[in-house]
Image (cartoon, rainbow, N blue to C red; front, top):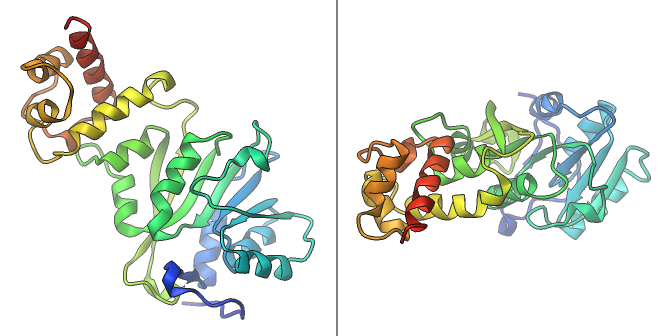
Length: 274
């Protein structure tokens, strides 16, 4: 397996850094990115610039986002005044994209996400403004499996991502592709952002309140987990499930997003009569 061994800053163990060095994997990620017409790539966690260079070689306009100052300095030295590159220092978990791009910007996202920050980064990008057309990102393999889970095996993470995007597993990446090698496999996934979330935006807060409370007991039958997690009156859980047409013996992980929304309707109708 070919690997690039360019000189540059070393990974910091304290920050959990693992720099992707495999040139074949870098090429596969860059080839998977579908940049919208007239748009650009937002690279999250540019690091030492390995993926940055690969994206630039394919003729893309790139905005490289990096949180660590020493790596920002390295990127500026590696790509001095590159006409197709803009380097931004910031944390992808909470940065306001509107500070450096237009509200109607057309862009896709690519990156090797830090394991510890992958979930909040993905949620922030899917829920923020402006919104990318897609994300092609690398995460821990177990997280990738959870995000791309099929119906019947949903988790709270699955729902929180698939509410906003169609999730697709692209390929796995072995530990030896990194410097230093992590203890686990990674996976590259594609999230194709929906034109609109599967739940009306004005109801998303209430939707997640219901889902998150019920998922506190995901292995219990839904009538038990709903009764313990919701704010319904006594007997309200079974009544809501009957109104929603959901078998009370099912578990939370088996409910689809439309079923959760139907259940929310039922819960709210019961509360309106209390």
